Amino acid sequence: MLSPAEFVGVYAQAGAKKAGNSAGRLFLAAVLAGFFIASGAVAASTASYGLDNTSAARVVSGLLFPFGLIMVIITGAELFTGNCMITISLLEKKASLVGMVRNLVIVYLGNLVGAVLLAAAIAYSGAFSNGALALYAIRTAANKCSLPFGRAVVLGILCNILVCAGVMCSLCGKSLPGRAIGAFVPVSFFVIGGFEHCVANMYYIPAGLLAARTVPNMVSWAQETGVNVSALNLAGFFSNMIPVTIGNIIGGCGFGALIWATQRQT
Image (cartoon, rainbow, N blue to C red):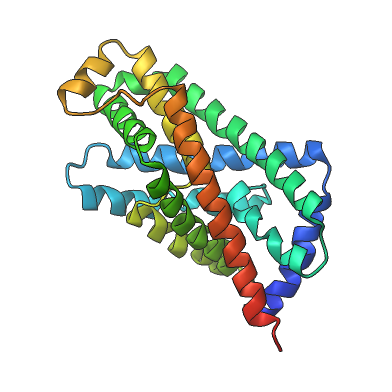
């Protein structure tokens, strides 16, 4: 595997390439990444919705969700949260701030399209005709939409420290199993810890909104089970995405800068 110092050099070049890629290529690769991360969320939700024990549900989700990031890395797709580490390229003077911001904006929008398209496809496919799964989607989305701003920022910071650690560990690997394990463990930790990932939420919240709108009487059922659906709307979506995105940026850029500083001081 690559040493941390070797990783900094390799990623500086990779990040520079990301910052300079054409808008069309970035957007399409980002749509793919949004779809993969959302696929991990679909698998995690479908496997855990029937578990009453919260700890067990988080462990099951933590064992399945990371495969979304593994697919992103292996296919070379573009993920907003991982690309926050372009700060390494910026600090190495291989990429400009304008190029980094351009990459993050385009990739964020592409991730959103990929995740929302999968949420719409899941709803259209009839998966939410399973009332218990629809209820789980609504509960998950409602809880995310009602998170206080400060808490969402902190959970976003913690999440992207681990996601970027997963990207780093994966890219340090020189074999497919090594790269997969490197991505798997840190991402599993963030899922089990209940941290907030903006791209995952691009699936979870639209899925909950669609379940509430397309399945008859689901909102009433959710309220009867104690779910507060008052924040489950478009405004609630943005009230989650804004602070979580801010937290993800702080965590990811901060992690990249810290790795660069610890390896480039000699």
